[in-house]
Every structure is written in C-alpha cells, then in structure tokens.
Length: 384
Ligand code: PLP
Image (tube, rainbow, N blue to C red; front, side, top):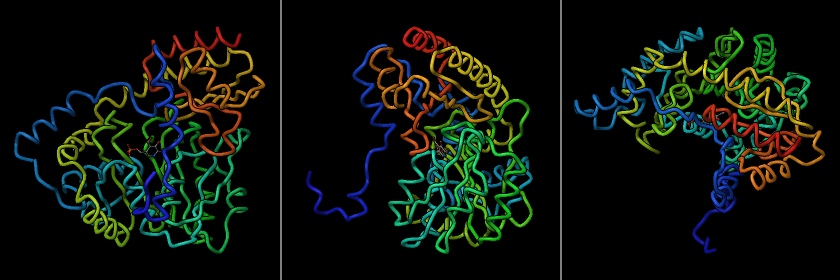
C-alpha cells in the first residue's frame, strides 16, 4: 500500500482488534452480537426532543470552544453528585465524547518516552493513543483474585522516574470491575507521593450494581489538582452517536484543553450539547437503564456459570461480563472463533485487551434480553 506521505507514527496505526472481529462477523448470518460496547436502546425521546428544539431555535452554530456555558453548568451540577466541585467557567470542557477528552488530556502531558501506566487488560484505545503520541505504555497487571481491580503494590512495581500519568477506569471496560474507596485512597496516596497525573475515565459511572454508588478519585483530598475526570453521555444516556462527553480538571489544564480543542475540532456538536443539558439535569432514563442492565447481568452470569468449562464472577459495574474460559482447554481466541463460527455469537477474546486478558472473554450485556437469552442457549448447546 502507498504510504510515502505518512509519518512513522501514522504508519504504526492499525485497526483495533474489536473492529476486525466485527468485520469477520459480517460474513455470518443470524449473528448475535455480544461484542459491542454500546447500549442497544435508543436515546430517550425527551433528550432527542431537546436537541430538536435547540436546532429549531437556531442553535446551529459553533459554541464556545469550551462548550456552551449551559452545558458546562449542567456538568458542574452533575459532578456534585460525586462530590466534585468544578467551576463551569474554568474547570470544565465539553468534548466530542469521552474518547476526545482522554486523547486531549494525554496530548497535553505526553513527552517522547514518558511512561503512562495502564492496567492490563484494558480498553485498547488508551494504548493506541499513548503509542501514537510517542509515550511509553507500561502495563499494570490486574488479577482475578483481586476482582481485576488495580492494586497499589502492582502500580508500585511499574513506576519509574519517567512515569507521569496513571489511567484509571472504574467501572471498568472490559472486566466490569469497580474500585472500592479503600483502593482509590491507596492509589491516591501513591499518585501524590510519586507526583502522577491521574486520568480517571468514569464513562460507566452510572452503571454500578448491588447498591454500590460510583465514587470519583478526584473527590479525595489533594486529588482534584492532579486528576482529569473524563466522562460522557454515551453510555449513561444511550447517546454514543451524539459524540458528547466532558472533562473536568485544574483550571490551567482545562484551559490548554480548550486551546487544543479550538485547533482540532472547534467544539462538540451543538445540538448534542443542549440535549446534554437536559439529560444531565434530569438523569432521564438512567434508573430504568440501570435496572435493565442489572437484570441482564444476572441472565448472563447465571447462563455462563451453567456452561461446562466456563466460570464467571459477578461484575460490579459497566455492562460487561468477563468469564474465565480456561476450563474449556482452549485459548480465548479459539473460543471466540468457535462461538462465531459454530453458534453465531460475537464475543471479544480477552487477549484483545492485553496479555493478562488471555483465558477470558468479554461479553457485553448491552444487547437485548431476548438475544442474550438466545446466546446463552446456543453457548450451552455448543459446550455442554
Ligand atoms: N472509555 C471507555 C472505558 C470506553 O469503553 C469508551 C467506549 O467504549 C469510551 C471511553 C469512549 O466513549 P465515548 O467516546 O463514546 O464517550
């Protein structure tokens, strides 16, 4: 392929593992997709109505690079749920999804060779972004015996003089793990001692189960000044296609993110921002969505635990189960391929999220209940 105009960084860019699996699945019929990381439900109608009203009333122009002040105020109010006070005038930026918030935050801190701590297994986009920006990915393994929660002793082992950034993601994609307050306190202490910037990706914050409430590491003492909180409307309000997210952090950092956004994309979608005001202020649909996912989680975990060779812990958050498939005697890639080829089910091999994901599968329960039930039956028929 011709690539003479591409820089070395661009030549290194590759399609992500998940997209490649979806491409392969496109050749099969009657496929149930449990690989996808987005809600099956449409955006709640009242949120759509607000976007429509905004467009009809002439909100068809750019907003401020930081985002419409109404949206930043709504974010500020929303963050108070998690005991974070962020000034809408200076400490908040509205972005094109959580993804843009993570990448802009990384862009502002990564120098060539600087080390970024990322848990393994982890959402792959972090690694691709860090790599593209010239940073060094340092993987921190997480273990099933700790319910896949990152532990300070493992972070300690990975920290060097060049470590600058620690990425946290709780509730977690792909493991469904949720960090306890005690674990957050220990990590915060270490981040302060080692002078680390924490990028805390909280896009699944509304999806916690069994009475657990999301807590942000940024609300711990002395953490606000070293934490960029990233969040998004995508998962919470079934708004993946709207591309609206946000970041909150120290004023000097957010100011530079705003300057960067000015030069990259100007602003997030205007209609989306006004829809976000309504969504964040009313939490439209969140309670029902959480109940629906909790129910599906039970169907998936019970179904998986009924299959020979597969064991599944009950995930505490997000909408992913991360079953251990080692009892099948196959690799996770073999199991995932077999499920697609023989049962028409798309799953993601855990190894796609890092070497520590080998032996596991990521199964999304953001699919309809009927398709989850059918998938569990097909899996059982295949393995039992
Ligand atoms: N962070 C995590 C952990 C994710 O799983 C995703 C999407 O799958 C995102 C961020 C990005 O979400 P969005 O850019 O749609 O807000």
